[in-house]
Amino acid sequence: MQARLWQTCLFAAVAVTFAGTALAQPSSAGVGTWKVNFAKSRAVTADKGPTSLNATITNEAAGAGVRCTVAVVSAADGSLRQWEFSGNYDGKDNAIKGNSQYGDIVALTRTDANTTRYIYKKGGTVTVTQTHVVSSDGKTMTISSTGTDIQGNPVNGVAVYDRQ
Image (cartoon, rainbow, N blue to C red; front, side, top):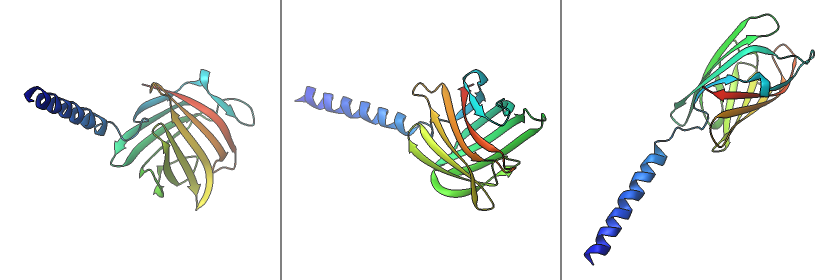
């Protein structure tokens, strides 16, 4: 009887430990710093060339959502675009600070543990829709983008980012 009680207590302790570990995990598989990998990416532009020289995304857990900072160096003119936003995965609009080429608002939703959808807007009109998928091993994030940027240029491509 005492051995059975001991086994039950041990099982309960292990269960509580694993539950606590699961709850302590980041709110998104995409949390971390990511750098674009051009060898694995595909962008469709008028000249079929890359749209940027460099791109880095930093995602930090923020409550039930994320704080995202993006830095992109344009291939067209070498200019730097930097923007950031914070938002929950609730589909509600969040203001973007900085000079995003996609708009001034973004709404985030979670499809599953490794997939999120970002819908960018400018003046209330959807410009670009992105799907972010983090690989099962957590080493890469693939972002599929479609739409039109704020200059009216088509956006259609797949960017692969490596975790730093």
